[in-house]
Length: 208
Image 1 (cartoon, rainbow, N blue to C red):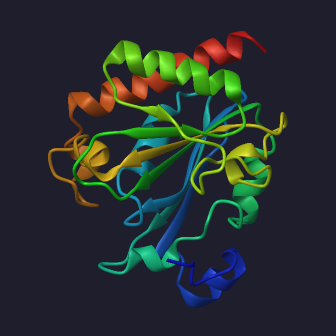
Image 2 (tube, rainbow, N blue to C red):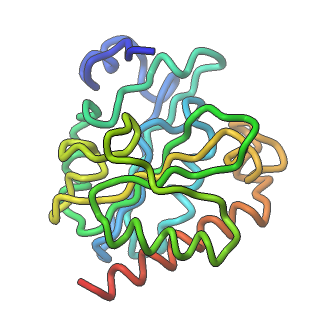
């Protein structure tokens, strides 16, 4: 389905910040950022992963959709997600991991994309070691994160990683998958997944 809004400026005119959506960010000094442009009720579970993945010296950016229903209307494709704080913050980092979700309630899977080939491969290695199902997403795919202007790739190095998680994978992270209870009912599968990503990121940083 095509986006209702071509950019963040259009979305900002249609919804009220704080009550209908929120922006959350933290700037650290590590050169690492975790982000989700489709958080809250759009692609559930992604906000929590971005927030909890970031250590004290890491950064995060989170767009949280907060409607009771219809949050998917606030989806802006990552190449058009031009919220100024997000673009400016990502551009100050060397390593970026963007958490996303796609619709599949029958299979646990993560489609690994983005232009940072080394980090893609390292995440794949860590997922395999941790027993997490995954696949490298073909570059021609619409969710491969292969466009230079995708929010995950606007880093200082012009590359990042996009992780597209199936619905079943994301719901398995929480005892109660609601906005109020996700962060309070985190399951071991969430921690296993997050730590696999963080290990790969640490290995990638050591190569810079």
